[in-house]
Image 1 (cartoon, rainbow, N blue to C red):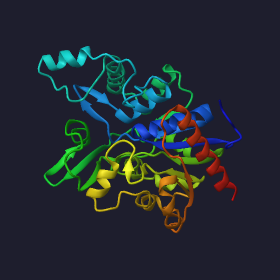
Image 2 (cartoon, helix red, strand yellow; image 1 turned 180 degrees about the horizontal axis):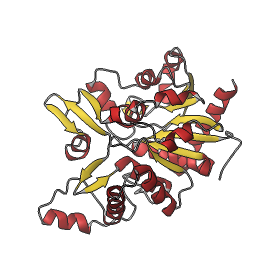
Image 3 (tube, rainbow, N blue to C red; image 1 turned 45 degrees about the horizontal axis):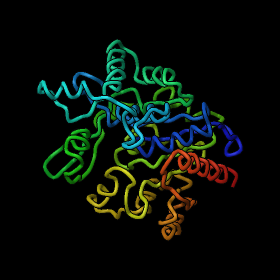
Length: 320
């Protein structure tokens, strides 16, 4: 289904969470092996002795066409015998690990302990799952998102899954990021002479995109092609996840313009929903061109349509 008329050359997407995975899937429908997806690893954590990479796994399962369509994460048709027995034995069953999902975590953990890099491990999974696109962790070093709350700090998964985002946030930090750096593979994708666009997917700007941009040296690599960012906020609400709630708790309006302000200075284009078209002039005043469209991805056809519009927008920015 590759359509080289939309954009020539290769494309890099920055992604995390379900919204990021959905747009990455749409981009892959157009680009195939011309797409590289740099994925947030700040959500990663150790659980039951296993190395869990939630955002990477969501991207892998979505690109492989096996993601649970209703919830966006996990595997379609999953069974839960492992988790049921874990809870029966008194183990921590708040983080849902499906029976088939566990296989990936076990293999990843074994290979990491054997000294393989996270990038190599997940590239192997992508090949096994028949994914043409390149799926890259943002770095090989461990980085952990820590959520600041009025009652102290929380590891991200405790905040996000165990506490269901119910506590208010006051900020975030990315533990270990100062010791990290873009991998050789990430740098190769961003420095590719055939790179024609960088797409920032409609992911949570605080806990999906900020960790990627916080990797030392990452922002400096984004200036070689038009950068098109897609707002995760539509009509004052996040399509999925706590982004709008976080914005309000951090004393900023939960609107597309506030997201655009976070990407000002390196994004050259910003994609908003028609519902937010009244904000276009203020966004353009930040130094970005604006594309207003139907930004809601209800199904796979919507994913491919929005991805195609982003690619055409990037092509227009590139030429003019």
